[in-house]
Image 1 (cartoon, one colour):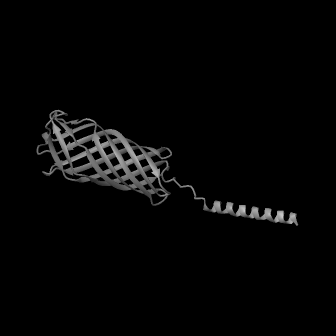
Image 2 (cartoon, helix red, strand yellow; image 1 turned 90 degrees about the vertical axis):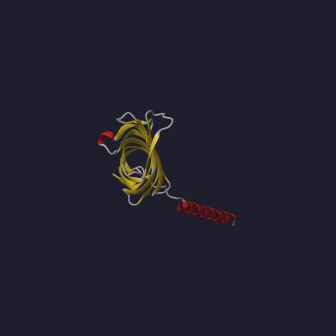
Image 3 (cartoon, helix red, strand yellow; image 1 turned 90 degrees about the horizontal axis):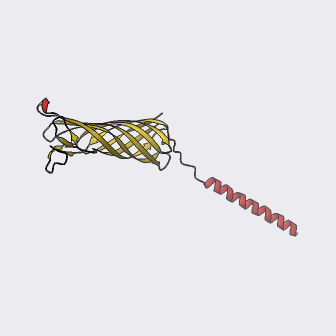
Length: 210
């Protein structure tokens, strides 16, 4: 009789343990699929707006009383070619063009070529946020009434990027980001004046993975 009780108890314990283990297996969440982040080579195409800004200018870069030119908001377009080098970390070649008008109606533009380092943090199998920093060249141009008086110059600059991404297919994601861009020092134009032109740009577009 005791033997029968022991056998029945052992069978009950084994059945209970198996049931708990099965429940744990069923309830264990699946690992997040981050393949849309770590997708090798990718291309980003973005468009958006450059916010209103004030461009300062003076005869020297530390002019205590520089002149200034106010710009309306304008338009921007960017293209980025990137490659994932480590999980979540990618390196990019980036081009950004911005054009706007001064309050008096003159055209002005900024063009940049940058090398970026970007880190992406996925939250689930479709949504992520990212941050990037870039270094490169910035070219500035401002139209003047006389072609001989056009303001133009270039300098070494940087950009800071914060954005979010949402995957819509295995190879395509929607992007939205904000960029701050400036030169390390004031740009010296062809006439010998110095220019400071920081910009904030808001962009949206597509990321295409290969």
